[in-house]
Image (cartoon, rainbow, N blue to C red; front, top):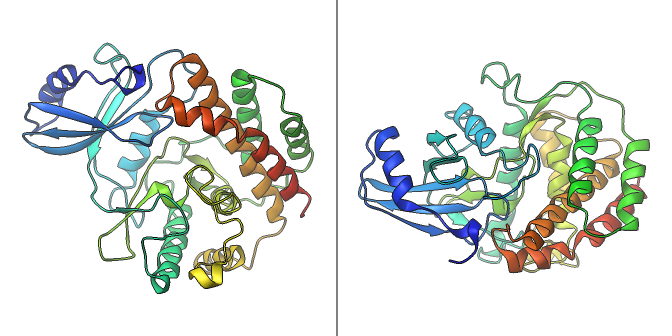
Length: 343
């Protein structure tokens, strides 16, 4: 592989794991997963078994981005909870080993659905899987932060003020051209933040169907993946992320449900999904949901702007796909403005 982010020094990894991971035995071979735009992810095959390795990409990185150490910490803390996660094995914070921090976790086998259309399932089985999504999402938001040692996992205070500030800075650091709709959306969000309602929960930060694995022959979730953006904050950010994804066009790039006849496809509507989530958490409903949806469009626009910048700089995990994703930044911004207008 020629791209730097796709390379993994398996000899160096094997030497380190031999010294630091009980029970590990080489030799070791690695195969890069096609996904994982942010943190390159590899399937490891060794004499002692199969594992997954996630690493920070090489090269100059934005401050606080690619936080594999946070991924490791939160999944380790969630072991044995109602939130299914892979077992964490070891983390290496010595950049000298392979050039960046990495961790190794259990390889969870299961079904992966790349798109929310759930085409691989029978029509009658799709709502059950979507309902399992509401269960898992509610379980994340019901985690006892103190009991799990996550009370300090994110700062206190207004989550949206903090997030909008953070992602605006990240967007500015990755900006490659002016996007007027993004500027308008940033200004609108800053002027329309809802009052703090006191909810402070664990937040996944990128909750969607393709970041979940499901057990074979069962609608049960086997593992929630990709915790890089997790923190403590406001739960409706995660809920808004699901609905944001579904507002995108279907297909490999948009991976949404726009224009889909959901009733015919056996899929929940946005309102049904929100209602099931609220029922699981004992909530009467959600006011001003348009803000949370607009916020998610903004954040995703900032994220894929970063993906585009890494592609242009030669540090993307999948350069060709990163360039295609970058074209969606104006569309995300416009969709965010549309969501804002629906309040």
